[in-house]
Image 1: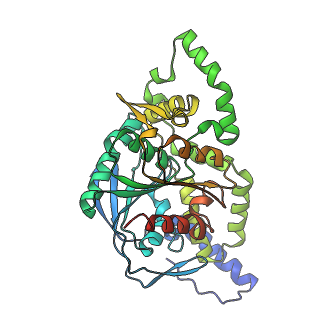
Image 2: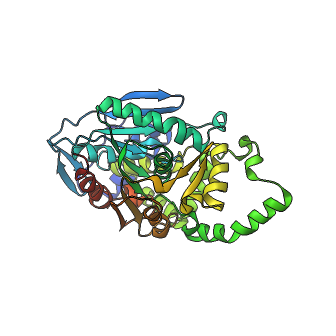
Image 3: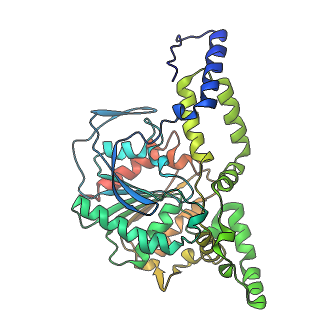
Length: 380
């Protein structure tokens, strides 16, 4: 790895020189510029490709954020916090950058932090269904964290699909063992999800009629035919903001001389470039049950031989939506408050798109700070 020493005001020739050096190194050894997953942890559970991490307490007196510092709290909240990622993104997004890490932020705020890693899905895992995640793995995750922490209840901070899986679990398992749930950009009402949502609502009835008349169903197809590779999810995500991808590439070209900038850009790009495959069986259920039939928004969803009754959920709930999110609109995310029986429930619209609301530049001062304050009041 090249050690870069650049004057505070480099000349154009120095920028060109270091830009060429960094570009070459990034091409040959891109891992040198990835600075995610740096917070120390212990793996406390593994079941197939799924694992659970328990993060060690911070040793620093304060941690750096992009817009300042916060002191590491001496107060420790008794209720453990489980971070639940979506299926398409890897667990790295919760420990993305040293100065933009959900893990480090909640550790600094006094929480006992655990993280679910759904693992690297391949075509060999096409059989994994929503039932696999909700009925098999989620109970195991909750139980191992309760045992490790010595507590009878947990809190969950969830992003996108992670929120839906957590809600499904809580709707099926009562008592759930969950005291608090925070959902960030979780599309409970998929018919309210922007252009895609309007399209789903329009084709819902024709699709049901065709299915009945022809006696065919997407659920009858072999799961291997519907397995979606990670690169396809990455492409769809980038197409929601094509100009943003172009501008990002141009900004990298201009700032290649700045090694720290290249580290941030490379790490963020890894999030969007290295998305995880979606298992075919899960895709079938998501398309039929969640997208076309919109069962979550209606409050009842078939889960294996049981039904997830979302009215059974009575824990405290805080839901977030991004003001400029093109994938999950505020209406789609707000629906969770309408299907649960919880008396303690709140909804916040904050700055950012689908990624920004969770880990953008303003997320620490908005989504994370609001969540930490809310959870602290409910974690004693």
